Image: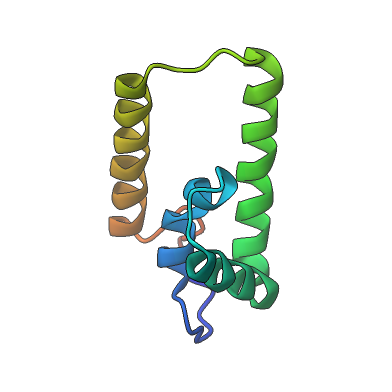
Length: 98
């Protein structure tokens, strides 16, 4: 996904790091880049909000149970595969013209 505007950190890069950002696993520099981009880019901010809501819902539903690390790696790998497929197809927001 790209909003079409120029940003210091591209939309695709920010969206690829959303879960790492939400999990607090980015270094200070990476967090600053993501925050700056989200402040500038409405479409990415909406996507971030959606991912944040999903994370909160999963956390609420699963309580304090931790997923095994191999399961976490498989899920994150599959998410990256799907994101790559979406990017390759032109994104979910692509519309057809008649």
